[in-house]
Image (cartoon, rainbow, N blue to C red; front, side, top):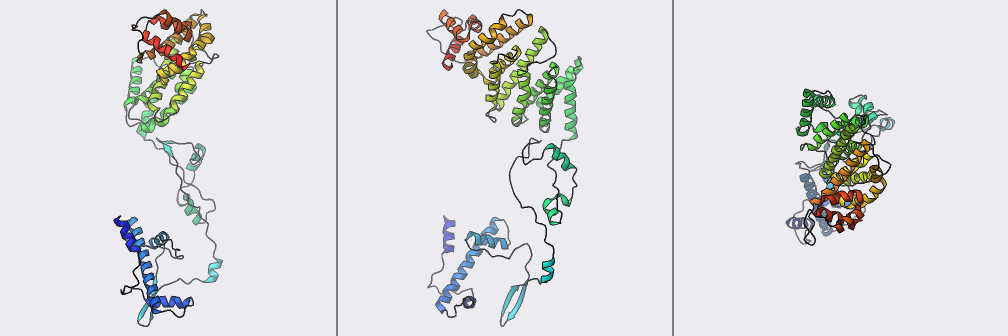
Amino acid sequence: MAARDARNSTQDPPSKGSEQRLLWNQENVRDVAESVGILKIGDEALRTLSQDVEYRIGQVIVEALRCMRLARRTTLTVQDISQALRVLDVEPLYGYGSGRPLRYGEASLGPQALFYVEDEEVEFEKLINAPLPKIPRDPSVTAHFLAVEGALLNCVENPTLPESRAHDLLPKGPGANPALAALSGQDNPNFKPAVKHVVSQELILYFEKIQSALMDDTDDAEVQRLREAALESVSSEPSIHQLIPYFVNFISTQVTHHLDDTFVLRQMMELTNALISNEHLFLAPYASPLCAPVLTCILGRKIGAENGVHALKEQYQLREFAASLAGQLARKYSESNKMLRPKLVRTCLKNFLNPSLPTAVWYGAVNALAAAGGPDVVKVLLLPNLKEFETTMLAPLQQKTDPSCVAEFESLVGAIMKAVQSLAGEDYPWINGSMNGYSSENEASSIKAFVGNIIGERIVQLGDHKLNQAVLDARNYH
C-alpha cells in the first residue's frame, strides 16, 4: 500500500496555484507552440504547460529508473527510457538505440549553450549503390526435452541418428553459427551438431566388463562368481546413471535376438532385476522400455530350443521370474507412469484368454496378472473368467496324457492357485462363527459353480474358509 500511495503521489500533478520555481524553460514551450501555428499564448497557459511538461518528464525518468533497478544496473540506458514510455502508454521515440555511443556537439547561441547529436555524413550515391546485407534468421524460442538421463529423445526438434552423423562431418568455426554466417554473406549456413552424449572411458570399460561377465556361459565356479559380482555391482553402484540407456538397449537387443537361449534370457532378466534394485538410479523414464523385454520373456510363444520336462521347468521358472519383475515395475513406477499398470494387466489378460496360444503363455500371463495387478485384479478380472477358461482351455489340456502336457497342466493350475491364494491375505469377516479350515457343502458347490470344477475342487480341498469367502465375494464383480 505504501508503494502504491507513493506511486499515486508521484503521478498527481502539482496544483495550479503553486508558485514553485520551474526547471523547464518556458521559452521552449513557446517555440514549440509557434512551430505548430499558435502565435499568441498567455503567460498563465505557458506556465501551466511548462509545469505539465516538467511533470511528464519526471514521470518518465521515475519509470526508467525503476526499469534500471529491476535490471540490476546503475547506468540509465536508452532502453530504460523506451520501456518507461511503453509502460506509460506513450508513443516511443524512433531512431535512437543504445547499441552505438552518441556523440554530442555544442553550439553557442548567445549566453545559452545548445547541445545536439552529431549525425554522420554519408554520401547518398555510395549508400544507394552498396549491396544489401543478408537477412539473418528470425530468432525464435521454444522449449522441449533434448535428452533424458543422457539419451537423445526422438522428437521433431531433435535430429535423427543419420542427421547427427552428417552433422558431425560439418566444419566447425564461425560459419557454424547460422546468424553470423548469414551476416557474413553465406547463402547456405551450416548448423552446429546436437549435444553429444559423452561417457567416460572408465564407464565404457565397466559396461564392457559387465557384458562379458553376464554373457559367459562357461560352467565354472570362477565364472559364476564373476557373474554374481557383476550383478551385485549393478544393483548397488551409484555412479552408473549414464549407462542406463545403454543397459536398457543391451537388454532389449539380447532378448530380441536370443529367444532360443534360456541362459541369455535369464541373465538379461537378472540384469533388469539388478537395475530395478539399485536405489541410486532414476529408472522412471525407462520403465516402459524395460517392460518390453520382460513381457517378451513372459508371453513369448517359444522360449528356448530344447524340449522335455527339464527344459520345460527351466522355461517356466524364467517366465515366473519375469512376471515378478513386471510386478516390481508396476508397483515402483505406476505413480510416475499412470498407464503402466493398466497396460501390463490388459496385455496379460488378453493373452490369458486367447485359446490359440500355448500353455506356457497362459502360465506367464496368470503369474504376471497376479504380480502386476495384485489381489484386486485377481478378484475383478481373473476369477470371473476362470470358468470359461476351464471350459475352453484347461479341460482339454487335462485330457492329454503326454508327460510334458501333464507337467504343463500342473504348472498352470499351480500358478492359478497361487494367484487365488493371494486373496487370503485380505481381511474377510467370518460368517456364523465358521472356523478357518472348514468348507461347507454349500460353499463348495458355490465355488465350483463360479470358477469351475478343476480350480473349484482345488480351492475346496484347502479348507480355508477365509479364502472361500474371498472367492465368493468376487461374484459381485461378475
